[in-house]
Length: 278
Image (tube, rainbow, N blue to C red; front, top):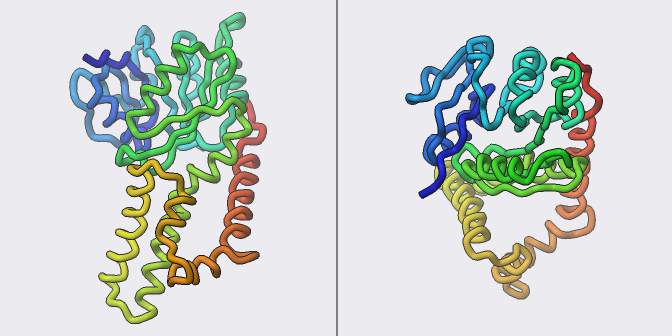
């Protein structure tokens, strides 16, 4: 039998926080506190509160999850800091480094307190249906047990992987964090081009979406690498080869996608720059 998850303090229960909570509830979760101004309810024995001030000061979560909007997190850090004296923090905030959050929390705690432990994560939107990809970074002071708990919690919404250096989160953000948008753009363009060439709009949408989702499912379930799958569908001198010759030409997909990923990673680095301490 799977061991029940420890009590959690979830700060923010929007799309990402809500997806994680749904996964934890299915797995079994000890009585926890969920802080959110918009959610209507949570099942018993869990507690929904509108403010961190409504969480009992003696509550001892096994983990704190920061899932607010990044621009709103500084307002809740003073209260989070008190709970972080006893529990590590998982951050799902884009653009906040481990150091920026650690320093901010430490400045709000009594002198001589242990260094707060912050684990940085980068999930993506398919987490909403349990098909997400989350990449994590933990500082050296995080224990193996804390890393294992983080992995278990985030597996509730999909696959989990770890990087050894925090600056690797920048390219992760550009690949998996932003990646669903690139896939959606492909489906959007396939649909538009189908309509432009005379297909009925409903048929063009069906073909585009099923092609993209079906190809992704085949890649996931087959375990075959993407290059091999591409070769398998490409007959010599056939229609696919002719189309790929255009897409893979100098200055086409390989070059433009590389430029796009670099631009995304550059922006991630800018967003992760120094933050003011509250």
